Amino acid sequence: MLAAFGGALLLGGATPASAQEAFEPQCFKPMPGTTKTLSYPAKPGPYRLALVNGFVGNSWRIQMIQSLKAWAARPENAKNFKELKIISTGTDVATQIAAIDNLVAAGYDGIIFIAVNPTSFGPTIARARRAGTLLVSFDNVVDSTDIMLVNEPQIDFEQVKSQFVFDNLKTKTGKVLEIRGLPGNSVDRDRSIGFHNVFGKKPGIEIVTVVGNWDDGTVQRVVSDAIATHGQFIGFVTQHGTTGLMNALLDAKHPKVPVGGAGENGSLRIINQNDWTSIARVQSPALSVVAMKGLIGLLQGKKLPQHVGLPVPTLYSKDLKDGANYSSKLPDNFQAGADFKECDVVLPIEELLKQTPDNN
Image 1 (cartoon, one colour):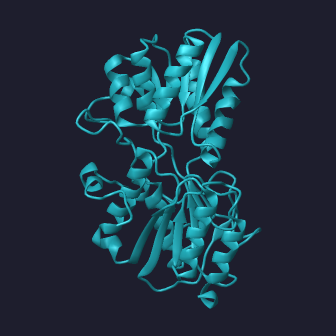
Image 2: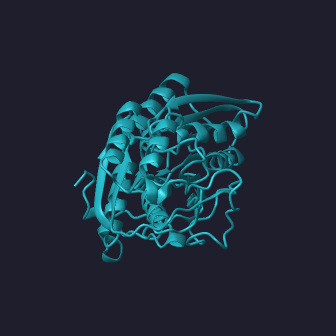
């Protein structure tokens, strides 16, 4: 395996990652500022491939795994898989590193993973490269230019959301609640930077921050506690768990103020039915599918941007319509607006529900 891939990685000063030369350029667009590409000698398939997930405690991770399994089960994609292994390791970085190392030692051709920590995987990446196993990091990406990263632009993600909330505040003086995600992850870090780029510079605004772990139940609890402690807020921005946020606001009979959230189906239903002003920006669970498509492309000898930046699906409360961009017939925890049509990744709910979120 080392002979097949040794020395193939294009490092600093590599060919610019223009849209014209990238694999499936309508999908795999370089993140702004990215000029490097990656390519490797083509390796015949089918391939032994794996997903190494970390945190498993919310509906987004469940839908992410179901999305990958549904896509991989389609006949046109199944031909590329000799094996698809899925492992969820929890939030311990050493456990996740050990899982990746074990797959590398077992001779897997490629691994996609959501990093528990963005800064701890340098030695892991080096070991995988020596063994000839390709790695692709997505969602909570690692801080590395040595492997392919697939994500949405996270600082901009939250900055746009926060700016919408600020622009729609009824008063520019008061408390705004920031509801963060899972500590230690790059998405949580970058999203908070985007939030503070807006609200940290505004006189008259007091920021209150709580940790919601991207989980509806946790978000509902910490928002309820924050309202009980601090009283009313003039605006809310949550990274995820928006259904929990909206349930907490309804329970507290909180006045209607602008909300920045994610695309959980239940939250969109509540917002529309109760006439709240909101923006929903969607970190799509189908990132796993785009990451796997990119990994297979690299194994097939295609050239791709080292850091892929995907568009952020965005929904505004004024545009919400039952049956169009959310559905009262779907589960509250279903992530709406999650398809990447540019990547030919459209996964109907019926197809997702056929897949279990476990390792089978």
